[in-house]
Image (cartoon, rainbow, N blue to C red; front, side, top):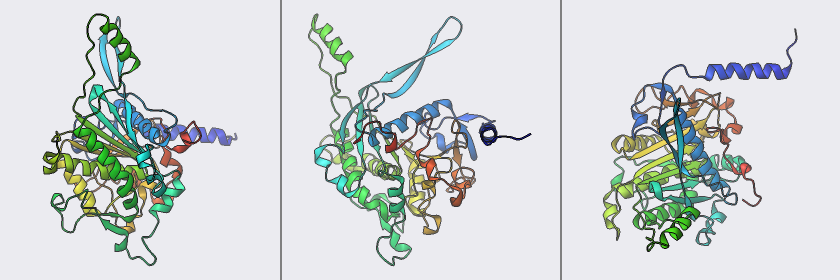
Length: 398
């Protein structure tokens, strides 16, 4: 009996799907408590359905940065409210309206695209008092590969590939390490342009929160209210949470900016503002992130998360994504060990990963795939069923 190629492929897919299905408990990391990633067991644990849905929402947020002409901005997290039904409890999603308040498409940032061709935006969700900062990567994966394999200058040594963190973003007194943490040189141009501009914009919005934009429902309700009494003007509320998301090069920016933001908000500099900054929760979600810094940098990021419940950083890798393995290990760059989420061979299942010893990334997740067996196709996802990248834009010129 002969088996056709298509049937063989289907059979292999089915086997992979079955093998990838979790058999133990589930864990919520993206939607769990502030330090959920610190309290999970060693090895890998399948994440909950709520985490998969949150992963998809955040992936769509990144696509909005890739596709500014598509207007893909989605409502902020859908909370589920239980209500008794005739036979079972039903779940009604509550959606929170969001609006973009500033972006790299604004004229004041136009020159930055000439230096590093990537996008970012900040949206505001008044009902949850949240700011969302999202970074795209470069226009193509080939551009990103060229950047990650670049040398700072001809005949550069191994150490020449590293640069210290800019002190205007990372004050020396906030980095309790000697030697100081270092990052790969390729990230510095994007950090000095898009990263710094986006960070300053977030800080401005934290100091002076935006006034909510009236939606169609707001306008109608205001008109109805005005017939009987004077309408109450919409008032700005303090920001309580900042989420930072990015893909590829944008993921590296999301990591660096979230750390710099935490240092600014949680440190003594917060009192130096005309309107002193209040503590905020900061969550960074990094899709397809390359390695950013050396062992000291990775240890520092881990330490910040252990000591600061208000800072949460999660790195999500799609199965055999090549970018997560770059720059190569021989350059002495490593990922932080806390917060890895790995989308398995069956993309319907993702795992939260924790190393067998503190300070070491798990070898049971993305690191289990050797670099020669990785694939650039996986860099786009899917993440909770959502593919990320400029190729997913619907409108030309996005």
